[in-house]
Amino acid sequence: MSISEAFYLNLAKRKNTLKVYNPYRDRYKLENLKHYFEAMFALPGPRVMLVGEAPGYKGCRLTGIPFSSGKLFDEVEHPFLQNLSSQLTLDQDCLVAENTASVVWRYLIDKPIVPLFWNSFPFHPHPPRIQKKNRPPSVAEIEEGAFYLNELVEAFQPDIVAGLGRAGTSCAQTVLPERDICYIRHPSYGGKRDFVTGMNQILNI
Image (tube, rainbow, N blue to C red):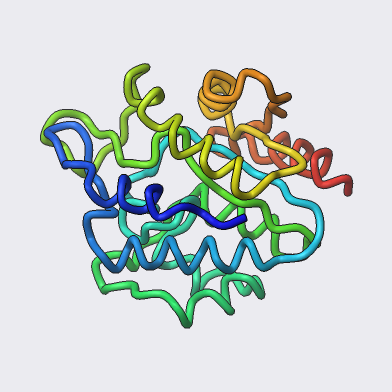
């Protein structure tokens, strides 16, 4: 099953506000996301979906791809990233590193499964007028993101859905109350070891 055009149209038309930036109003970032999904849906094997809280200002906000950064494609020699990078448009402004993306993909470099990454709120929430900072999404914003998360689950049909961090897990549980959501410790703030343990468990390594 493929992702509906309504999914992409709704992403693209969401307006920017004083507290939310929509990267998908930039056509190339929306195209980057489409290439990412096409590559993910073509992968064989068990399907795992990892849900975070929201895009960060150094990562998905700049590339359009969840759990990525512009530097990631040079930093981490993962076959999936290398194959995907030739299809992407990444301008000079986005060539910065994002710590969570780097940790996650370095972990995945020798693993047999690549999870599909998404966020409960797919746009970048930031404090009023402060673009280069992150804030947690509000309850209303998580409710807004439910459409996209439900669409992706329906299209991707994951065998396992996991949340990254307490916030990501809670968001996923709110949106998908009928599913068992696995909790994975966020790798930041000293959580890398527990992150690895949690990922090993859901990937059966």
